[in-house]
Length: 273
Image 1: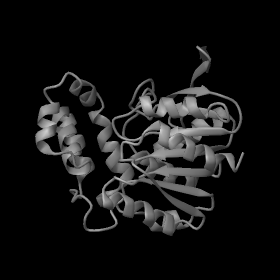
Image 2: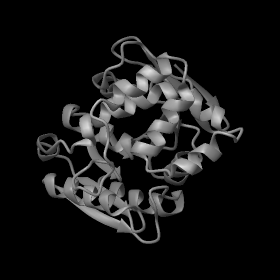
Image 3: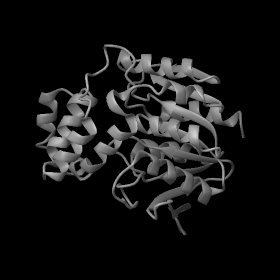
Image 4: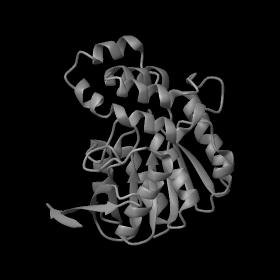
């Protein structure tokens, strides 16, 4: 199902469990699917700008992960269902695709690439695996803790737990954020934070065997000013994947700009058009 909106096509795919997955599609050429991370959906300004920047060369599909934006959400949650969502989006878009994933979305994209032959090439922005002692110390049952808080009617506490423990946002800053009107938007996505924790797995451990099994060309990107543990994670992913390249983007933090990211993706994916 598709509809045209100001030169961009909006549509839906149906996942294996019947969940409706909404997407925006723009441009022409080989299909490139964008997989976003925590607290974001396809309306996120950075990903929307990346889609616009790459659409002259690719058919860019920017979709809402389940539980967000225009997509449905079928319980119980399982990370494999998100892989099925990506498969459905790729099938609807043409049958094969290059894939980009950012942050926890990069971990999801990596898992999808290992299981879906339709993923031909893979680019990852700062998958937050924990590969050294400087990474945040996470509760082993983080996913359950987050889900329990939401079920108990405390989505704000779930957001705070995720931000402080997983994203390393200072607690005093989070307390200030809770007084801002934008906090309501974060609470609206609180139920998906357990999904992020499920995708990452206990302790955000790097799935070395999965990475080593990837046969696609892979680009791993990190920001020069991101935490050292994130850069170390990127290097570890690249070392585990047989056909991977690791690059550091000058001046960038984890909140990468579209202006820095899009040229890197264009260069990498254009080699394989």
